[in-house]
Image (tube, rainbow, N blue to C red; front, side, top):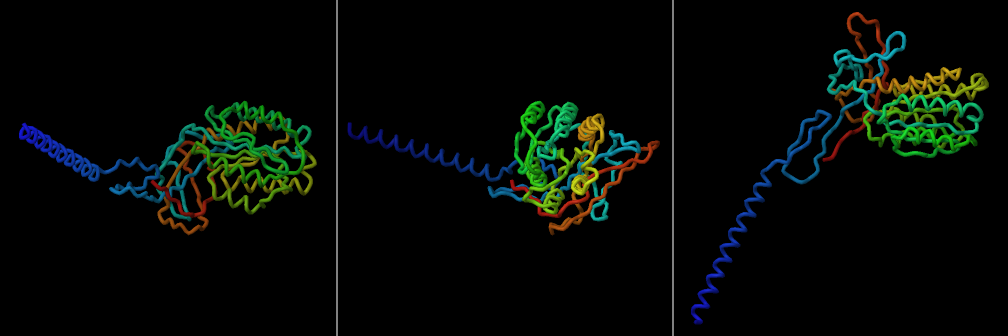
Length: 339
């Protein structure tokens, strides 16, 4: 009897050994298959060659793609759509580049609305601006994303990342103009927020008389950050007769003109209520009729230097001369993505 029990235990032990051996072999084969199977890498939108690796370390890829937002108009200032990629020529530091990305779709925009609520906007100024902003919201893309910043002696984020245009308008009915004007601070905050927007196209809309007297940042600092960003900036100067004739009013216009032109945008100074409404609608339409292009500079060096960009447009046969507006250039700062 004891001998039979001993044989049973030995048989059980043998079965366990066989099982452990098979189990170990399966694990070894699975690990080997995992090591030799290359990981799938999603397509790189910048056109940079993909890197396949068998390690788990992050892979750093250079993304030197430069993106530009273009506005094309005819001799009468009307927006021109339907052009192909072949109609555009890009020069980076006077060298022609190959366009690798092109889009002319009516894409939504992440837009920062910078609304002046300082004392200089009291009276009819702020009421007219609120009313005209309704035209902008009504004409904009339904999926546009808004950031609302009000500013007097300090800039304040009233709404962060909303697609409810009506909420923007309602929020502005609760503010009253008072104190000084921190316009430069508002622009700095606007760039910071819009740069985090969900959409590829980004813009700022400044509604102000342009008179800054309370900012921590200065004009040069704001101009620098605008040149570093890819955010098209528009400004609507809410001016009256006193602003047009005095020094502060002229300085405010000069600031808005410089800030918008360097980004490929534009500033407007309406003189009537009808013109004010039309300008807000025009800006919304322009954002919906823009082209987006991208290229990788052939001689790019991440040295932080300013690189001048020039875009030319060739009209189709039979059409008159066209004008194209875009940002003037960019700083060649290192650009990498980690995967």
